[in-house]
Length: 112
Length: 107
Image (cartoon, rainbow over all chains, first blue to last red; front, side, top):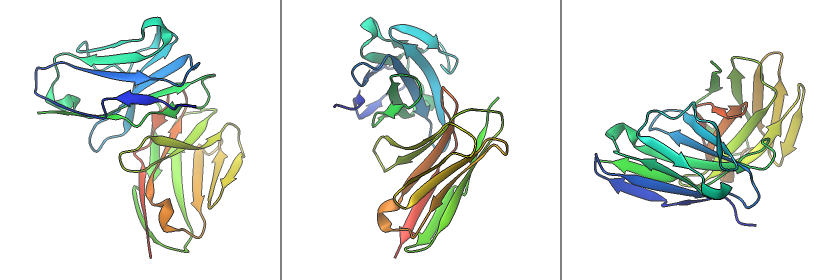
């Protein structure tokens, strides 16, 4: 069974540009989460989808971040325009019953 | 606001030795998780602890949960080099993480 996959694994963009991160959850997992780890800080929750609906987006830092999950399958997280402080590792996780979450390998975003 | 504190944040230990990583959390929660992360890799689920007094063991790692004390421990027995990684505890859903403990096992 394929795990959670994220694309790209690394992205380097200039300040002001747009970047879109993608997450493919484990097949059949209704719950999909985005987390972020900024350098030297804790891993922080961004938002939670149940199927295609946003269940909780309390962790989204500001309106430059837009997450979607069309059809309840894969999810994208777009940052537009990117700022320096957006640099970090973005993790996606999925779970079936909301108990145990399985993580992807993360996307390392560097904004220069 | 739920806060999760791990200590130590850095741990260098000799092969064959035992040690414990501590995870304290600030408010009541009914679930606690331990994850392992190798550099550049995903977070690998180690243990899910769902009740007071829960104890789980896998190889040289054993995790326990005391919900009254809001404390979980990850005990390492007779450490080997392969255990070198960063270990995170996390609480609740969505997960609130500790800062992680970077473990280095040296010969």
